[in-house]
Every structure is written in C-alpha cells, then in structure tokens.
Length: 458
Image (cartoon, rainbow, N blue to C red):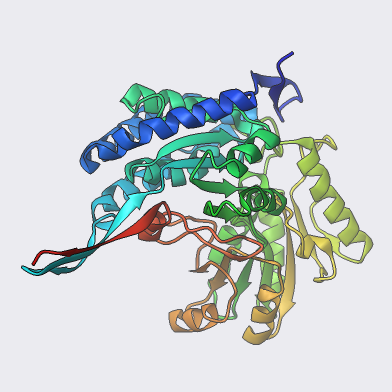
C-alpha cells in the first residue's frame, strides 16, 4: 500500500489534501532525469532562461485570488491579505534583473598572450526543501535564481503546503520550462536524506527548523555537497529613547503578530528604553487587543489560526511557563480561541531570559517586552540568543544605528523597519540560524561554482 502525505487544514482540522509519497526508486529516477536534462538547460542562452522564469512568475500572477484561498486552507493566513504574489514577484524579478551582471565572468586578463578569467558554472541539480509559512516566497528565493543560473531543480515542499509545489510546477511548465528541468516531489524524510547521501543532487537549500537543518547536514556529511540553511530566529527589536514611538509600536507589533507570528524573521523580543517603556506597552496592548481572531476565509478576520495545533501547543506552553515564573500576560483570551489552532495573540511583560519564551523560537503570536536603561544593556540582551537572523533598531540617529548594528550578532540589521526581505541584500544568518546565502548577487554565487580559465595564447 502506498504511503501518503496529508495536509490538515487549520481552519477545522479536516484533511485538506493527501498525496502519494514518491518511492525511493521514483525519487532517484526523478533526480536522474533532472541530471540528464541539466546540460541542455544550461546550454540555453541566459536571456532565454531568464525569460522562461519571468513567464512562470507571470503565470502564478494570474491566479492570486486562488492563491489566497488555498493558503488560508493550508496554513491559515486570512484571505484579506491576498496571498504572496507581491513578494514572490519582487524577489524573482529582482534576481532576473541582475542575472546578467551577477553571472558575468571576471576577466583578469585578455591579451595577445593570455586569457585569464573566472566563470560561474551551475552546480547541476539543486534540491529545494521549502517551508510552509511563506510557501511561495521562500521557494522562489532559490528556484528562480537556480534555474536562471542553469541548474535543474527538484522542489520538496512542506506537508502543510503540498498544493504550493503543485501550483509552482504547473506555472513553470505552462511557461515552457521543461518537465524534467523543474520537478515537484512528495518525499518523506528518509527518501530526502537518501537523495542527499547518495549524491543524487549537487546542492541543497533548506529552510526550516534547526533540527531539520541538522538532518540535512548529517545526510550530506562526507559527500561535499553544499548545504545552504536558513533555520529561523528569535529576532529582537530595540526602541531607543529618540524613536518615533507610534511607528515603532505599529511596525514591531505587526512584525511580531502578522501571519500569526509564523515568520522566521518575525519580532519575538522587544527591548524598550525606560523613558518610552510604559507608553510602548500600553499602545502595544491596545493594538493587539484590536485584532480579530477567526476563520481566515472571513474577510473581517485579521488573525487566522496557527498552521497546526501542535505549533499552537508549543506557544501556549511557552506562555504558560512564563506566566508561572512571574510574567504578566496582557491580552485576555479571545472568544475565537478554541484551545487548538486558534490562539489568542499575547503580549508579555516582566519577562526574563530565563524563560523559554525569550530564548526558544516561539514561531507564534507572542512577544515579550523588556525595559532597558542603555544601548549597552539592549545590545547585550539582543545578542543573548542562540539565533542570529535579523535585528531591528528604532532611532532617529542613523549613525548610531550603524554603530550599534556593528555590535549585533545577526544576519541583517534594520533601522526603523523589520520583518522584510530585501532581494538586493543577502538573506543570511549566523549561529543556529544557519549559514545560507540567499538572493542578491551573493545568491547567484551560492548557486554556482567558480571555474577558472588560464589560457596561454602564445
């Protein structure tokens, strides 16, 4: 009997989708076909590969209404937010626009005597293991530049967003990308590991949990296959005494709560200068109290359920432990909170770094707020984390933000904004966030390898 993978809808706990898993043999065959197709794909002119990827993005753009509804069913994001096409298109379009320059050879010498240069050559077959929280945008971060650079791609999407992989494959194939060049696979963990350990692929991009990233690296151990990981964070925000309080509250709380807090670069810890602390907390509580928790298919809903009951259970446990240890929870239980996937968003004060809610990734709609007396205290607390993805500084002093940013152990430093991925900048992290290099010129470098030419002409 064939094994299957199921997507349980957070709306009502029903099975929304079920698909048969690929056997090991079928997965290996898909990889072999992708490998066989890669040389011809890479031989196509760069402009043609760019055009086909752009056409695929346009295909996705034709179905944005469907996208929003399907995402609501799969992972609970309210339809009022309209899916992900804006960010999806921004990232793919930027990478298409810089491809010619980013992939251009570095010519050291082109004389009568020598041609010396460094070319960028595709790795071959790229395996993309994508997460469910922003399923279109996280996948396209790698799929678009990988294909443009001349790689073939196998996409293994999260069980919670099975349909996204199918929709992407439909769009790319409708645009003219050959079937074997871009394939969507339904894989279990063991088969995924076998593809890597057996060297059926040439590069792995994984976005997900620390434990999942460790599994990817363990599967690749000794193969020398590059593994790029982005494993989430515990991202902090710091509100200095000179900050615009209204803007800081609005943006940081949205960064903590949007998508039910299910964002790797979402704000999970906020440190506020003592002069603004009381006002910040009061305004933050008022804002979160205004949210409408409910069915994501309802246009009036501003916060949907978490993607799965087990994710909500972890957030509830962190909140309960913090309150038992002395934290204050400011948001009363909302009427739609069912003790399952529908979870009341929460603002906590009187928190400390001894509490899991300030240490472990919550990945849900909860944020802890701590009063600080100085920049030095804020920086020490911001760095007191096993993660390092992004950090947000709120101040009117750009020079000070840059100075403090240099002291932060993080992949991206924001000033007066947060929870945004700029495709022109490298998406990366440190510590347990992993060691990925996504988007920007560096993203193309990660998805290719350097090849040197030293040609003596005379």
